[in-house]
Length: 146
Image 1: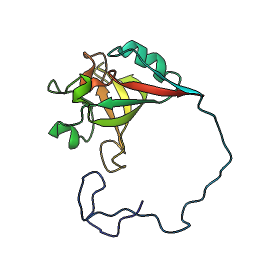
Image 2: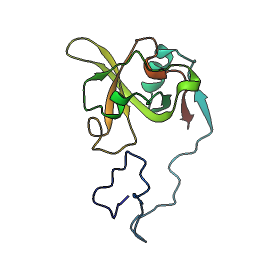
Image 3: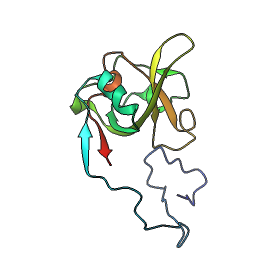
Image 4: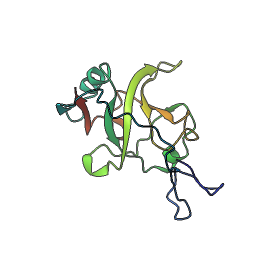
């Protein structure tokens, strides 16, 4: 995606931003690589079930990304007690791709955001794991079965 406006921030909704792809800029290959037979969901709120799914491959998850400190995240393990974990409070789709623990021993999820590489840690963030379903990460998680 390209932006003709130098000050355009793709992570914020701004009517001045118009994203476009120049004609014929993207090369496509129409050969199927895989066939998605159906989708599976993890158990609602079950981080252990999500961990099993992420150990197989990336999992699409919905989270509460409405907290101002999340929008300005630059690194570390994100945790905010004000985050919602019920389905009605989830407002953003991201991709859970792994897990780990900080140097201080805090377990976290490795999550890919869609706000570009200038946000977070090159477009990724660490969300506290095993913390009562922080920001609803295990509330609405699904993955394709190929």
